[in-house]
Length: 61
Image (cartoon, rainbow, N blue to C red; front, side, top):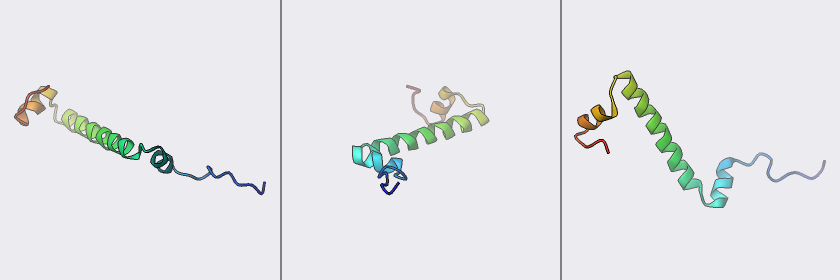
């Protein structure tokens, strides 16, 4: 047991940085959280996607 596994304790962030995908993964995670929070807020206000688009003065598409 004197040999140590170099992968034990390494973080997912380190792996993503090595692969060069950290930035993309982080951006996707941020967008997912924002979309989730927006959906919950719209649900709490009983607001449809079309209603939200109207409030933002933009089209739904």
